[in-house]
Image (cartoon, rainbow, N blue to C red; front, side):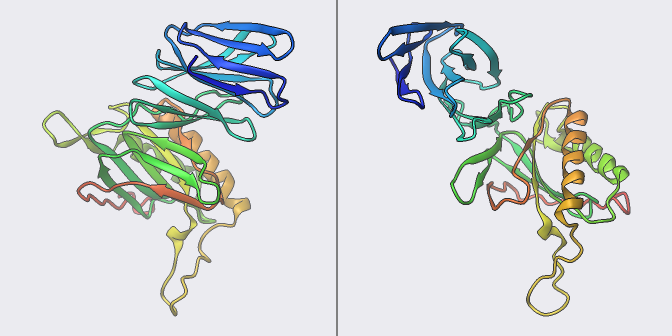
Length: 288
């Protein structure tokens, strides 16, 4: 056995086994379930808060969500490039975090769309971009490290990607659907990733890179008067949230894959390393 945990009510135990199985015991009745489906040894297990779901990680590079009462798999999350060493549910049961030998940690939504925070792991070259929804500020920088977004209060990982772009999205009241579509398409098609000759000649879409979008109202800071920045140009949350969500959907459609996100309005810590640096500004109003 590689890993074992009590159920939330303390009446059952789940264990990860090198025989490719997940075992569930009741402390009084003994073995009540053998969950089979992994192709290699199981490395980690965990319960969600209700005790109605189990997650397991494996050397086969996958994560499986199980219904222990039905002894059945309900979802398989794939994308890690190497052995997945550990798996845990968030306290609300809506997310699963995994850690792998591919040098990445991932956070997955496990509600209606399992695996929404998927990325292809750390590559030699990655790219970050900061963008406002109207495109006035897009900052693109090269990096050799993954991007990780954590909750500043409890340290929970909210999103992480390897090769791809980080979009810090600021929204103002005048933003339109046309602005969103133009900026999303520009980010997906912009030739900012290196080709085999080391030249910036490949787009995010061409390399099937990932995107992480984090809300950033301070992109609209005005320092014209005094020493305290004014953010009056930024949209209020009731205006900004629909635009933010629409941009995430549009970018996902343009890339043909789900887009990772932070948590709107929360205090986030973003870990990234600029390589270069390379900085590019894009203006949707001027379309350049």
